[in-house]
Length: 263
Image (cartoon, rainbow, N blue to C red):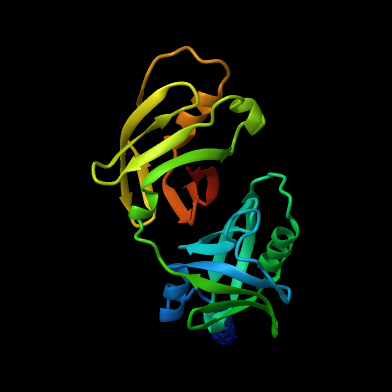
């Protein structure tokens, strides 16, 4: 009797183990293929959303989406959209909405449409220089490959801050008179600029799209408000960057912290 019970229990355990293994093996898994490498290694310009053509510039900016490892960043002419993304087998894709900036802009329709599309899309297709996001069998957004710039060279020049994340004080309240600037000297690996009150200089290092800034030395003028402290503190935390045309975005993890326009 006891032997029969032991045999029955052993059979049940083997059966349950087999079910567990079967379930695990049929789950979708992250994949790494030539297609996904092409997708994550480039930036894509939005050219159509919900069947409507999108202008090359929206509010003076090129609308785009870019993928970095397991995260994405996008801009449809106003706010930065960030979050997580998982590429699955059979060209399946899953986005999770993260933190976005909260700026008010004249043209907002494209951004709202893109934000909705990103969350609802469940598969994608790559066709040469075209990237399509689909919901089921319906294409909900089309993108065109943006030719890659020489990564570090794209930083060269002077940039003026027009957005910073974190403080509850409005941007205009932080910088009522002078906006912070940063100038990259690619040959010497040095940065310089104005923090909105004091002049500063320092060093930087890049590897692919990662960036770090060395200690910053600045003049010692007494300044009103907290804007300059916010600027320098945020700059010291940056670890990633993205350049799209005349827009430079400095990022911490998957959160866009600072945005500059080229002067």
